[in-house]
Image (cartoon, rainbow, N blue to C red; front, side, top):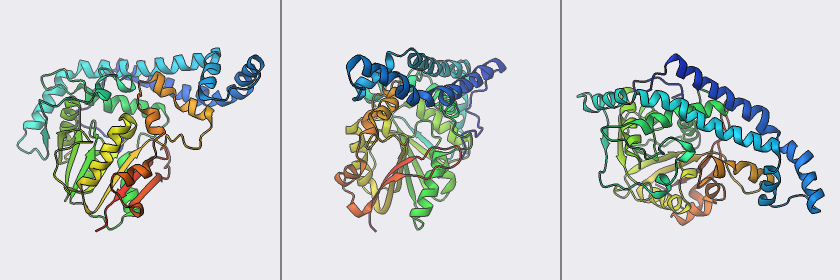
Length: 374
């Protein structure tokens, strides 16, 4: 299911709002294509020699490289523009989302109450979202992932899906790209005999990845969890509008309320870089607990791995930690998933960690997999 799929829960921008959103995409593409890719050359030809002249040797550590680069006006200009573009992205999308907030809530209620409803929505009024989600507006998303304005509010999910699409397009990712499709192709190739009857999507956010599993495995019972009530209201309504049967629950991925051995397939998409190391390890333990014999978990994320990278590349890739409200970006980048999967209870010969082959207009997504022997 592609990023550009249309459904009832999408905010409908006015012509002016659409123009601003398209400008942000073009602005981000230019920053990434024309300026960010030149930073290595700037460092090697200008910044490092200047630092060496002043300090007697080139900058060696990531902290020294950051200090040297931030002293350069060209780098500061790019960094300032990149931060401004991210802020503008949420403002441009927020104009549409908040203008249509009442319609989105009414549409979600109608879909939830419809007698033809396929899935379900289970919100926990006593649930407290983890501080790692509530303390910062991750990605600078307005109000953060746990935003809930009450009275059936769906703003968090609408912002996440629509703003996330603008972000992806600004990165040069194709409008037809789908992380769930990549993972499903991987499963079909590496585990061709898997026929899941019960599927769980962890950290489902707006449900963009949950729906493709319900459509690809129509005989399966698909569940999805997240910590944000606004996210889940939107995700459930979105799934219903697309004719997909998904059961959404408000739960923590590291401590669900499902019984042991409840699922044949557990997936997550771009969640690991949004959670702490402790939560990630808890999520892997929970995956092992919830899998039936013969079951498989596939946790997919961005290809951000610091192991083997130069200090300059680590500096470059850590920009999001400091400037895009990504508190666990480097925690994820420094993680070692293979021993963590073993510690979670997976046998050493039931683990796969690596990258998916990049398709046109896609990243080479990273996956960490564990499975139980039948």
